[in-house]
Amino acid sequence: MSIRGNCWNNTPQESFFGHLKDETYIKDCETLEELQEEIGDYIDYHNNYRP
Image (cartoon, rainbow, N blue to C red; front, top):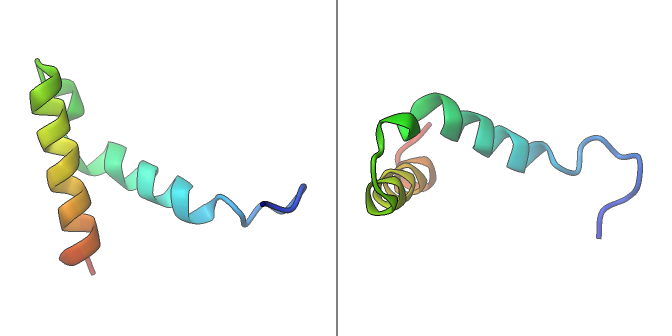
């Protein structure tokens, strides 16, 4: 449960989704399967290889 008025609660999620939008080619995906693969690849990269 987050504390109301605490701006630091969503920091990790905001950072992750900000990087996801900046570092992937979501607009180039034409099908749902391509989009799922692109996001899955980014999650793997983010969790295992990104410094």
